[in-house]
Length: 68
Image (cartoon, rainbow, N blue to C red; front, side, top):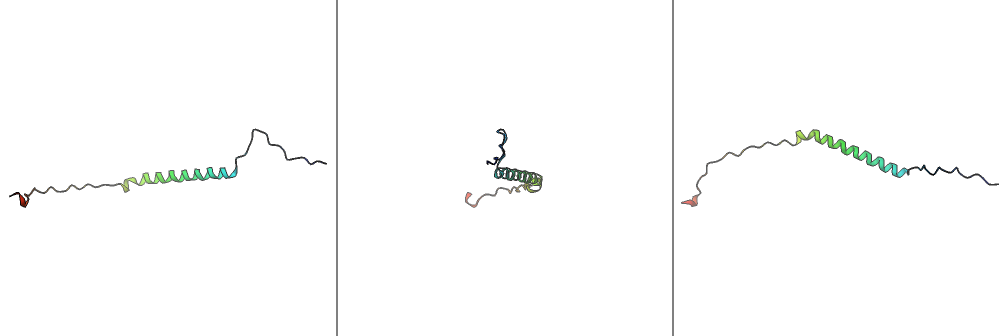
């Protein structure tokens, strides 16, 4: 007496490996975190990158002691 085998899958359908799905999910989460960090840095930029330029007072040119 022969037992029936497992049902055959149709040739057009196949399942993705679980490890591949986990890797894609990890990459998607990483991209989302990077995008969030980029937006946070963009919002912080006006506070962080403030530059104040103070001009140096121009002193009158004094002759050097060796010019005599």
